[in-house]
Length: 88
Image 1 (tube, helix red, strand yellow):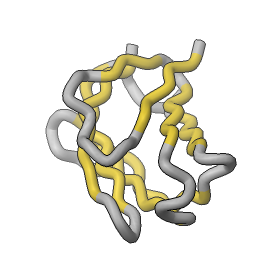
Image 2: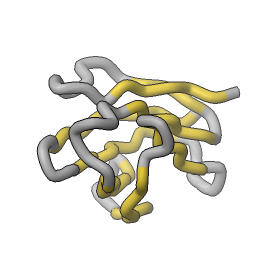
Image 3: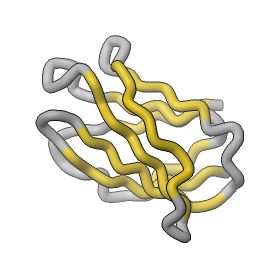
């Protein structure tokens, strides 16, 4: 099971739910490298990495994460956004 999230000009306004693979689609023409930091609900940094998109897609394996609420901070040269995600 995979859940897909879209990272656009506007921040995501709803909570996204997924299981093990977090898929982020980005506007490929806006940037090449994306910095993603994922924080637990308590504010602990659980992942920090830079990714290159593959045809606008960034896949993040979060199978080692415990179920719960997380916040993904996504930053590129032209955009910055934080989305709330829930791992089932």
